Image (tube, rainbow, N blue to C red; front, top):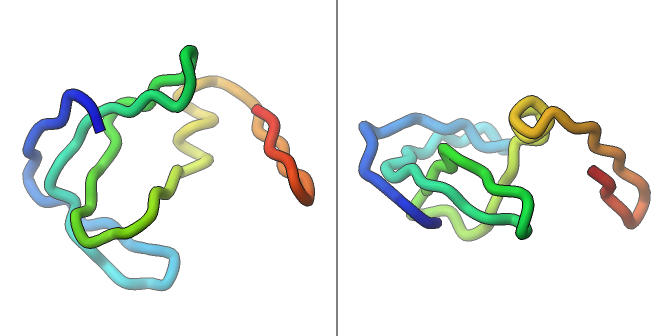
Length: 72
């Protein structure tokens, strides 16, 4: 997470229904041409999740999933 800053706690609902609080926000570089802004940091979370709906909206792209491939 780059350029991180403290934010008022933001509740985040996880896929299993649990709610956790995000306390930091920043940006992250996925590739030389893809930068994600307003990424939330959840201290007790052990993996990274990306909202595909938000990614599609922000990057104005199409995402196609196959059995072993994801194309943007």
